[in-house]
Amino acid sequence: MILKGIKKEKRAIEMGFNWLFAIIAGGFILFLAIYASTKLITRSESTQNTEIAARLISFLDPMETGLASGKSSVINFRTKSKTYFTCKEVSNPPFGKQEISFTDQPIGAKYGETGESISIYNKYVFVDNGIEGKSYFIFSVPFSMPYKVADIIILSANNYCFYNAPEEVVEDIEGLNIKNVVFANSSSKCSGINVCFQGLSECDVRVNLQAKYVEKEGKKLYYIDNLIYGAIFASPEIYECNVKRLMKKFVELGGVYIEKIKIIERNHCYSNIQPKLEVMMVEANKLSSSKALLNLDEKSKEIDQINKGAYACALYS
Image (tube, rainbow, N blue to C red; front, side, top):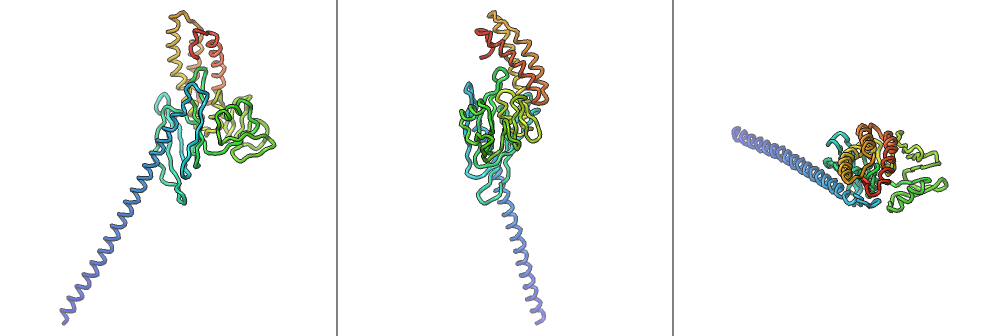
């Protein structure tokens, strides 16, 4: 009787142990399954956001203006999204590069995992470090110094109030039909980031048309030509980085134009553009901040006047 009792007890212990082992093993397998599916979902989400960032870059291709004065468009998303930008002037020499990464926010959920960074090598996107919204507003304008250097692309998600803007700015913005910019004056108010060209004491961004700089976040961003828009809409660090990248491209194009000068001289077309251009190229190559643009602008205007007077022997049109 005692032995039978012992056998029953042993079977009970074995049975209890088997159940306990099954529960622990089952729980561990369930944990692994949940962990694996979570990683798979996260990886899938990250991959999807990486693909969206790549598509965003391809969307910028039609913004190249060619000989046109500018283009504009709107990118709409189903849900709220965040896009992060960085700029690196020393990477990918001599032109530098920008990087973009993307994440979105499904309805009623938090932002998902940000996708991998995608590099942009041949474009100059003037934008905040991170923009957020369901709609991105985009426009492009050419930048010349004095010949065309590149198209600059402006990307934003906020609404902007331009106070007391000069006529040429109004014509540019209205001509491009940019939908997130509203023009106002001292007696009217609008909702958005305040950009003041004159008057008003409380401004998020202040434009000094005489001294040619835009003041924002406690910094002065100097501009020439259409870079005024890059200075207004971009983060200071992205603006300064892209200015340096543009100067590198100006130098590379300058080398091409110097070779062209040698060719047109065979047709007895002579001018004193080459030495002036070479001086500009040296200064542009060592540019350390946007303030140096003002001195380059003076030299650019001199070259442009000479080129316009060359008529059939013009170096560029």
